[in-house]
Every structure is written in structure tokens, then in C-alpha cells.
Image (cartoon, rainbow, N blue to C red; front, side, top):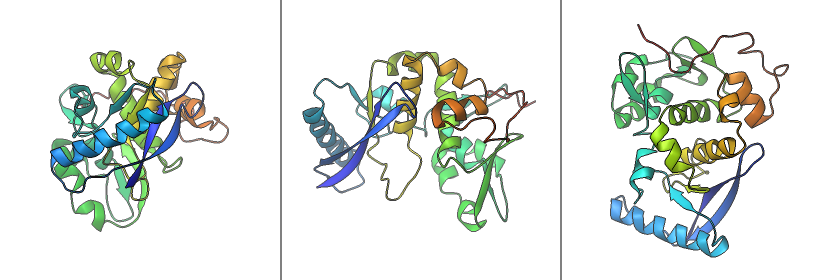
Length: 234
């Protein structure tokens, strides 16, 4: 047996709640083994919440929507190129001894995540997405910010994902990782149902206040900044 979190969308900050579910885990790296674990996880969650509509968000999902929503596949488009959320996240890391490594935007998601510089450049100290620097706190702020913005720009996916209320990611283990695409989707749905999505995405300040309860007087990073997420890279 194993335990994984399911992220259920709710209508108040932080717009998700975590439900830890015990299920039968099938070891192995093959897609078929991963999908057996997903089925088991979903069956156990459905016993607890039979009226829920649950979607796996990962490249191992049995749903094409869930595969498309993987951070490895969900793309951000600028005026000249397109790159995945995963590449944006990894390519925005600033370390004591280097970074951000903007060339990772032109790599595959897997190449970006495994780039040795990410492990050889010392302590992570910030994120810098194009010319805008982001703090490390709250700990999952930057990841959720870029993921939800990317999803918001894909209207076809936004319409489909709003049909669901609970989200899993079989690859996410909270004992080993911090950021989770399933959590980001749950937040997106919660914001959408409260008609707060547009306001939250107007600026990082708004996002921090609405999702995390961090007011402008607590965060001076983005004050008075004109912001546009989908940056034109001339």
C-alpha cells in the first residue's frame, strides 16, 4: 500500500484541499504499471467521495486531457517560440553560482529537468522569468503562477478542465517534491468558480493576495509593476 494526495478544488483560499488516500501501488516505470496505480488511487478516492469528478494530471494519465495538462506538455507561447511549463520553471531558476539558464527554454522538458547545471550551481536563491524576478516564498508560488497562467492562455483546455473538481498526479510524492501540477489545476478551477481567475492573474501581487493571503504591504517585489505574462521576446 502507498499514500498519495488528491487535490480537491474549493471556493476559498488557497482554493484546494488535500485528501490523502491509501491505495495499492504497482511498482515499475512502465506506463501500464503507472496506470494500474492511478486506477487503484482513483477507486479508493471514489469510495470516499463518490460524487467527485477526478482527473489524473500527468503524462501517464489515461485521459488525453490529463496528458495535455502535464507540465511537460502544457506550452507557453511568445511571439517567436513555444516552450513547456517545465522548461519555463527549470529555465527560470537562479542559483548562487549561476542561472537563470534561459537556453533550457529551447530544450525538451525532460532535457531541461535533467540538466546537470541545476544540481551543480549551488543553492537556489530566486526565480527569474524573462526580466522579472520572483521570490522563493511562498514556496510553490512561482510554479503555480506560471502553470496557471499557461493554462489560462489555452482556452480549449480551460473549458474541459472545469468539468472536474479533483485532481491527482501519480508521480507526485510530497515527501520528495514541493510543486505539483494537480494542485495548480485545483487552484485554477477554484479561482474560476469564484470568478476570481482574471483578477488573480492581472499581476503577481494579486495572485499572492488572492491565493496566499499575502497583502501588498507584506510583499514589495511587484508593487507598481506593469505586468504581462505572455512576454514578447523580440
